[in-house]
Image (cartoon, rainbow, N blue to C red):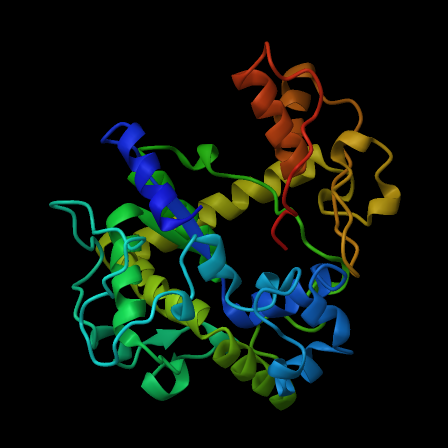
Length: 348
């Protein structure tokens, strides 16, 4: 959804609508995207490995080439934000360029999480990369046009009530439940779209066990996806500001309760109590969409569940595309007669 389309949504939604989204460390996303979109992106398809691609991305990546939007700044793209070349900001200008396609911030609405000082994001901030505190700076972020980035970060702050962080997903879910006055049972769920063997072509970012080579690869991935890195640092900071307001000990208790509830549901609902290789999933309703070079794991329900328990377990185990079809059928019962085909590949 583009910025202008988002403003159209804001005009038709009730004023008390709650908008939330999620960001992920660009290094982890790059590993996943390279595996998942290998046959879709011409840049990835021509490269023998992610390391080779990041060593010299310009040799493979060509803006506008088929599928190459998957190869750079995928988070920025998914938020519907334009890339800098499309909007030429004057260097040093604190204001966005005078472009007819550039909307103004909604009247009376400003950044919710923090001040819009363009230099604020350049201050050192701890991140979750490699399981250690990491510092961002103007050098590591390779801003180019900071006013361009800052304007769009401020705009996202004005639209979204909460942005979750994948690396702190359970903590994010607790904050989401609190913001919506929900219970933890309303946000408990099973992981979907995980790939066999970790799905990242290596250890997950943030596990503290990355090799020096992996850390170098992560640094190159973040530098290449510099707009995504700006998004990630920004919303990582806003998440931890909210956690501070919520209370760390209170959060730790809620996260432990959420994880215990998820584990109990997994043992009750699932064969083996965990995700399985798709070759073991005979029920097509629970077989995840297979795409890319990695196997996407899914779930098999235990036999003997009561009708009520089975209904709950089915909701938790259903892959997102089939779940979307269920929601479509429920929302539009007279117009949806068959599962709808997605026009875009699901996110990795």
